[in-house]
Image: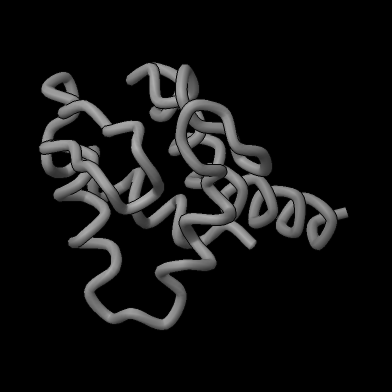
Length: 101
């Protein structure tokens, strides 16, 4: 019984960061333009993860784009600056997106 509880606890702890970052994306209105696995106004999070895979500075690059916005990387529609997202939150979001497969 003790092992089952330990495994359940570890499983819930492992899932918490992913869920927390998804919740953060929802609370910061990122999901108005992005979805995990399909293009909306902006690219799918999984497509972003694929494009930046293997780049050592990807999280920092994405965090900067989240905060300041950008244009031209994914087409003609610019991404507006997200002034409601601070640098720490942007880095959390970037790492979450990069971890999606």
